Length: 634
Image (tube, rainbow, N blue to C red; front, top):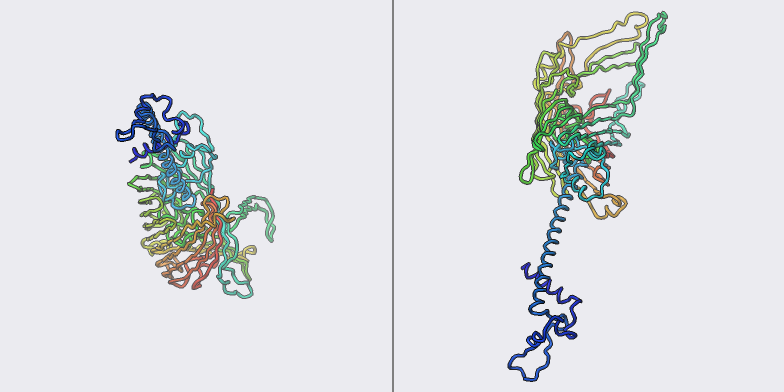
């Protein structure tokens, strides 16, 4: 059929070619002979003897070429046109293939910048920026700053990952090939209806709910590629950090009522409550077998669940982290949870998808402590309290803890945008100063489903802490009551106490889940309005999140004397939270969100969250919150 089309197309061009003269002007081309003309004008024998020229049926168009030489011209023209059409078809097919590759990879990169999908564990660019839907090699890809390029071939190489630098390149361009600098940050305004605390005499009631802005965090990431198979990645977080000022000095002086001489040691720390500086990631990756097998060592993110790997604020469309991973952590340590260790990771391609795996040996979560000093100014004698606060925290990085924990994750992605994964964590958590040995065993299942513009994403985590009663008994034997001497003229106004606070939270088991349902809406009116003009892919994203946690045998109160527990109160508590929100993204890496959330106590006498400093957990049945948040990634 194509041959007939080519023939008809060529014949039409030749017949309509302006270079050919009309039939009425020249019956034959100049190259024709009288014999040819006689042959062409010959009439059938049945016609009258007196003959007149017979006009050709297509005389009003073009004249047919000569039957010999012009037929060869026609054949040559057909062949030439056929070759041109075939070349054009190949060019069109190549352009379509390139466009499909670039659009597919570009959409995948856009999902990555939203933190839409980044749990692939063997991407070439880093662990924190990874997307579970992409097929790149590392579990996180830091946002990179690259110079703009107008070269189409260079753009394709960068989008598809096909560009390889040869060893003959010599010195590399640091801004585009070796050092990538990125990061993210977020802030939030929160207003809730948690009422004031109970009145205490003439003192003002304690404020337990707030209507204020919260600068959640600012994170800087670097990604260095000293060679094609080596990567160095780091992530440093500044959480709720406005400033830190430390003052230390020692001066001689005379002090006290008796004016005794001596040396005065002064130390002052100025900062804000909840401030933190933390190295969340710092690792080296060595790819042994391309994407399929590599080694990673350093401070890594344990791959239990998906939120810990995808914890970047600009990935999510609700301006608060989940109960399971942060506010009422079912994870052994709250997000962003990092551990020092080493392990393997890789990506195994399948038909239409891939399998990603990673496994690490790490120092592991342990029962840690910090000394909390409380000075109370009151009528009569003032009170100085020193409380060792005991809680679960990431393993130390100073070599003082045995590396006896393991964590792993296995993910199946049948196609970009969808994934299901299983993960786990197993390790000892009791420190060396205790005589008992108990382990944490955590299991998780998570996944994501993408159907067009609709997305469903969720996670379930179960954590068991073994026989917590044995741990509490040994803690009671190890803790010793400490008192400070308060006799004398200079200390008689000071009362000293020492007690322990088990912040933990200490439980036998914890488990919970969360699920997000959202729709990426790209209406035409949004692109044409001031909200969309000048932006490549503006979106409105309505979202619903439901989450719930259970704490079994939560230690509510613990008292002991002479190394024996005298009172132990355990309680099962449960809480759920429903959040409805709308997010506007002018570009994929900047979400502007408005959300309403309702927290409800399902079981027990207190809420799991919030646990307010100085007030503890609330006994309210429920409370409501309005959230407005802005996050940015670069």
